[in-house]
Amino acid sequence: PVLILLGPPGAGKGTQARKLEDKYGLVQLSTGDLLRAAVAQGTEAGKAAKAVMEAGGLVSDEIVIAILRDRIKAPDCTSGVILDGFPRTTVQAEALDALLAESGQKINAAISLEVDDAAMVERISGRYTCGACGEGYHDRFKTPKEDGVCDNCGATEMKRRADDKAETVASRLEAYHASTAPLIGYYEGKNALSRIDAMGRIEEVAAGLGAIVEKAT
Ligand code: AP5
Ligand code: ZN
Image 1: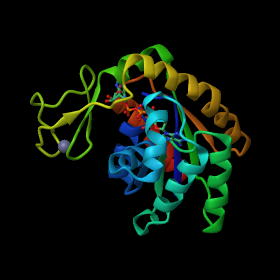
Image 2: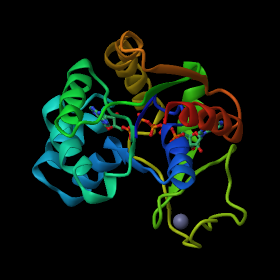
Image 3: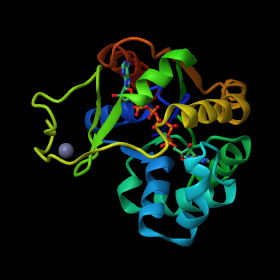
Image 4: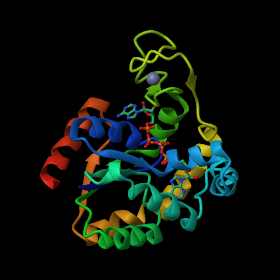
């Protein structure tokens, strides 16, 4: 199956994608993670993306589509993927349809995580992740059992993202409303859209998402 998680920065796409991976044996494909890896490795794409990401804008469709195309063809993706943060523009959505058509696949569900913008700044500015395994945490909403130690792998290097400053978050929200929110209508038009209230607790949202995924797959 192919599932898409749509939603503004901080809506919980990454958090929920990781849960769906564990539960349904799917692979999370986050273009944000792929781009951050490209920046860290200093590839051509990474060099072009770095400043745009730090400013909270959208990286060019050309770069993002190329990165996604390479990743989705990998053997571990054949049993199904959860797209987290892709597509983000109509051009990307059309490219995805074409890419899936090549392998006789189609989208099972595009799920819009609905939240209010004001709460997103708090969610994002409190966020950090385990530097070793990528598990996500939050200063208020999801703290590890032992301060500074990852519940999942025991590592002690927690890190924060360069674009999680309040002023950058505002630009990211703007980019979402201008370029990505129109995809809700795009998938509605294809009868593939589900909406979920993502203001509840992480476990509540996960339960609602699970029900949608089971119906769609
Ligand atoms: P990307 O990495 O995709 O970031 P984003 O969309 O801004 O999303 P976030 O990762 O900030 O939020 P999330 O929804 O995953 O929330 P999370 O689960 O972490 O993109 C980064 C940048 O890369 C973009 O700005 C752009 O420049 C570029 N880019 C990426 N893809 C692109 C594309 N396709 N095209 C062009 N450019 C692209 O949750 C946030 C926090 O809240 C966590 O701490 C979590 O623990 C907590 N939390 C989660 N759910 C809840 C809940 N229900 N209650 C309370 N707390 C919660
Ligand atoms: Zn860890």
